[in-house]
Amino acid sequence: MQAAIASQDWVTVLHRRRQRLAARVNFPVVLWAGLPSPRNFPANVYPFRASSHFLYYAGLPLMGAAIHLQDDRLTLFWDETPPAAALWHGPSPTRDAIAAKIGADAAYPLSELPTFARGAASIAAQDAETASAQTLLRGEIVPSHDRALAEAIVMGRLIHDEAAIAGIRSAAQVAMRAHRAGMAATPSAKTESAVRAAMEHVIIAHNMTCAYNSIVTVQGEVLHNDRYHHVLKTGDLLLADVGAEAPTGWASDITRTWPVSGRFSPTQRAIYDVVLAAHDACIAAIQPGVEYRDIHLLACQTLAEGLVEVGILKGHPEDLVEQDAHALFFPHGVGHLLGLDVHDMEDLGDLAGYEIGRDRSDRFGLCFLRLDRILRTGMAVTIEPGFYQVPGILNDPARRDRYRDVVNWERLKQFGDVRGIRIEDDVLVTVTGHEVLTADLPTAAPAIEEMVAG
Image 1 (tube, rainbow, N blue to C red):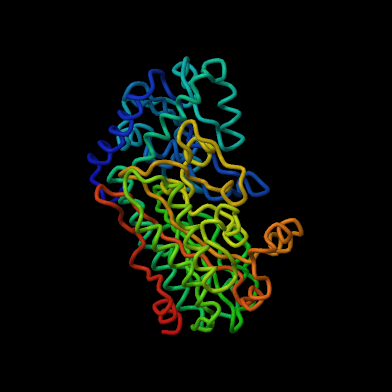
Image 2 (cartoon, rainbow, N blue to C red):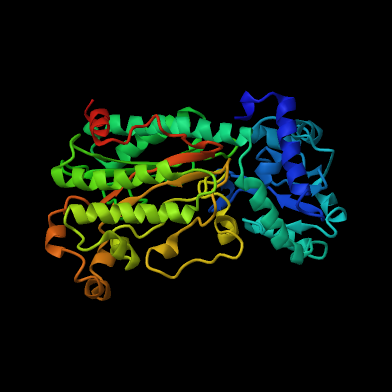
């Protein structure tokens, strides 16, 4: 994304972001990039991923760096790589060169940070080394300002600028290619891992990383399944939730569910179309001013209507949703914020996802709603309704008793080949309504079958 923006334009983008933050806070700010985590011994580390808050204002994933923001001025604190490190990692740019690239007003070694940090606010560190460094500054940092800073960052990052949207678009384009590759690989694949490899190959080949641990599974009822050893069999549905992350951190998040054989069974197709109806209804309703909670409830209502129609649920859909009966099969929220993180800013908890003054519900299903905000132009969200047969939910004696009169348990047995179906797209809220950033990847069942079989 940055490569597509001229150097001076990129500096302007970062400066405008800092200006928006300065308009919301009247105290200095310190943000950390973080450090890589070791895998068993110090020199063998996991791939480094800078803090998204740092990335948003500094623009580069600088390992071990910190920035100090005051008004719209940025001061970089970063230790240049010692010459001996070139043996292992090649030459590194100078601190001044990095400062110029991000539009910093000044740059110093990291040891100079304490002299600038007095009265500053900060965001909680995400790794042990940075947490330790932040602890050393606690005499200078003002903890009472931290929540105000978090609120200001949320409001700044909630509405995406053109550079951010370009980054999300680039990640979405690669993720769509990955899903096509996964479908194409399925007929010859023996296990889930082979399909995963085909999908992640595309992402890596485009110099991107996975935005999260890929979910490629025939056990679609396990929402965050991270196992890939199961053999693919005729009659299975394969649920693939795979997203790409651009080098500058912008994420995509796509889920498709397809039949391993290339053809949905009648029962699979019936449930797939119910989930797709909820998906389509929710996306059609997205526009500025709409409550995302209402989008979620629309998904619940549409799913309940469909499940009544196929004979799994009994009663009036409105009453079923009021009783949370739909949550037996759709226990999570319909989506979340999308941005520099696939669940954007969720390191700040519900401060990002919930409007000030709103709290999570304790209702079954609704308690997992990640986003309860009024939609605004420039927000990016996911829409991902689903249907799951989770044994831990459906076999729970208390729930079996509570919903004994509204679930046709004998009819449900006929849908034993539907373990889990989810359909997910990335949606940008626009002035006139919405844009589906992942629309080039079809969702209709015949198109899905064609991509797998073809």
